[in-house]
Length: 192
Length: 192
Image 1 (cartoon, each protein chain N blue to C red):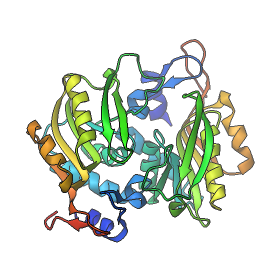
Image 2 (cartoon, each protein chain N blue to C red; image 1 turned 135 degrees about the vertical axis):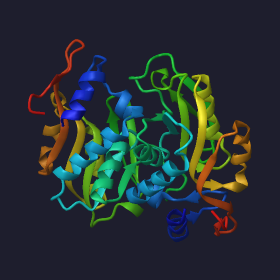
Image 3 (cartoon, one colour; image 1 turned 135 degrees about the horizontal axis):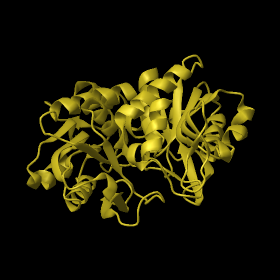
């Protein structure tokens, strides 16, 4: 998606170690109009998958998942990383290694909001190794729900997440694909 | 706001100890159309305050802040509770007691996204004791920014947050006001 790609070119920073800083418009400050355009694009790309619910992980997945949900008219569930006191004792919980935190985090969903008949579209900010998204997949599958699609704002193709998720046999859409991050450069897929 | 009030009446749960569970449409699963309507309402109520930026706290403030930002065409910054590796070493940081967590949490904002000329509108899910919002106020004031308004989806008037924030002399708007939570009842302000 051209608007997102241009914004990354203009404001994104390669911090080294595969870390892309997009704090000015996605991860700390959010540009709502850009996020809305991304949500609109996801809604177009996934209009035929028959999704009944959008699933994401707090924190940075919330903005793109919410704008996608707005355009698709679907509820969105964000997996929590800490169990709030409002959640029942019995939950779906999985562990997921966090690339940017250097440790394992919990992903928790209440069975109240993820049932076995749901058709789940996963939306997140990044598709890198795919570890977080695989955690969401495990939660959805444990609930008996089916995965119907996976969308990420930014894919780092060199981290292999797409291959790791291919076994699901569902459409995987990223709005911008980055093929390499060398020195302080960010290399985009030409057609991405 | 009638739509939000009716949703709380239908699906909200008084868990005791002043805890209102709204996990089905705000805090875990989000109803995007309801959040969009709330954002539209905030945009109307704050259209004349001259805001240049919307400020909230992760996690549950993100959805209403984002939809408000969409309707106002303003960027939104969400204060982080853990410093990500993409954030510079020098940050604005304050401590805030968390009502629902029973402990103190950090609220962190990068100086990159909150400058001294900003006119900040704070949007959050709850106004209870006002502790989280006071933390956001301290961060904004440390940055040299001015606060121009405070909006919350749900105010628990019996926890005194409005009085604690009155010294700021800015408009404080809540879309639904709850005056008491006794037994398993939720008592709404008649005009709220």
